[in-house]
Image (cartoon, rainbow, N blue to C red; front, side):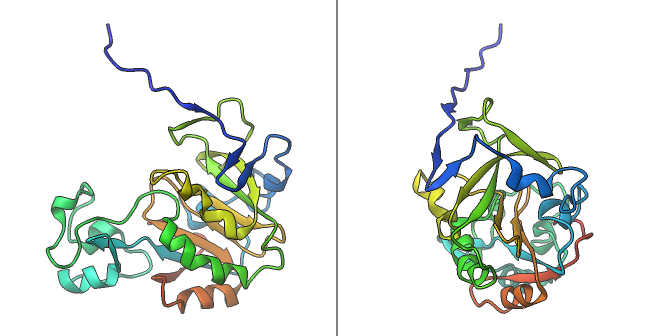
Length: 242
């Protein structure tokens, strides 16, 4: 007889922070679903964000030291490695692909916690908000996708839309409210996907990634690459996510 405890998940909420959980329609996400123009190929940057945009950027999730953010470039400088648009974290720290992201592999005085895997970390999201807001005409009307597989909520009876490799719950709200799920508790995930009603851009993350990807205009990507609070690199739609 198995001794595993049954994990009881909370009922799906009507509001996720200040984002409304949509059970009435999935049509705003139709453009991202299979055979639609925005549906990217699994295993590509476009598969994490969406296809059909002029330019793409990779936003690195920072490592940390004493709970303060540390750029990948700082870790690379200390390790004698380098960061390129496709570099993976294990390459920065000089480990092989089977490297386990644990703090005991940290470098004293440089970093003691690896970059967060999963959707956009709250501090990165806050730095993204003003840049993204400048590049949409509909910052008050945005849509979001939250992977239904995050363990705390029972989304079994909530309709979902399909993206490459994931089924997403549809949320709606203002762009400024994208970070409000963090107020639920320190472990609440932010949405994986964000896009405004005018579809000027889309942001994509994933439970298995240490980066967030943004697709949009060349002007938006230039702004992201120049943002002082972000560590960003240009990538292409067909690149593998790192």
